[in-house]
Image (cartoon, rainbow, N blue to C red; front, top):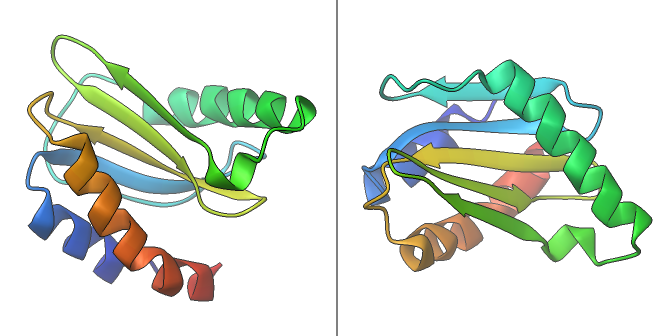
Length: 115
């Protein structure tokens, strides 16, 4: 369903190791892995869903929320897509966050059509 969007994001951001879309219920819709990494994405998706739901409880504008986490061996970014879905990107720490955000913004319309 999201394969073409994921591939376009990876083409413009080759540092991406994995990208996926999850529901706020913690269930994965789809993911694509481009390189190995040492994170349990099933558990991570559920944990991030909990965090995103807590943002909703704070009455923040969760549809425009993003979370970034820089680690020694990976970069993790979470982007709210709609009221019910979010995208998780795991990348090399050398990724340029602004470039990732720019190309994700260019893909928002196709993503919204799929959701």
